[in-house]
Length: 162
Image (cartoon, rainbow, N blue to C red; front, side):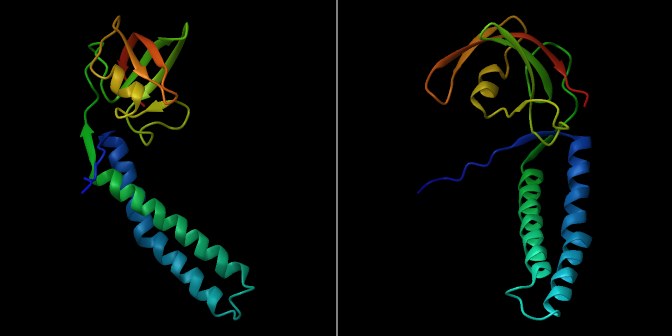
């Protein structure tokens, strides 16, 4: 038997509240609105050539997928305060590393925290698990998906203030 591994994600309280509000909207008024669109389109007749009906069904599928995604994320979230500014890498930190001679800055945590302008790695990702718990000045490495070892030096770790 295989065990299901549940991934927990670090979320700030603000991100949790924002995602909970989105879930409430999608599963309440949003869901009702889509059902009304489907019913209105269904009343127009032949469903095979009814573009409005098919568009509403597609919208319903996307809505339900997002509801499932948010439900799972929120059920398994670790809600945390902004981590301390002590230079130690942990979820919720903006981490600057040196890899391949270049500096790269990313957020360690859930994509749902950031606004999309930042690269985000989960703490379960290869690079995330390699740097998690390390501090500025430490060097480590991780195995890339292609099997190569990637050397990483932590330059800094600062709390993400979003």
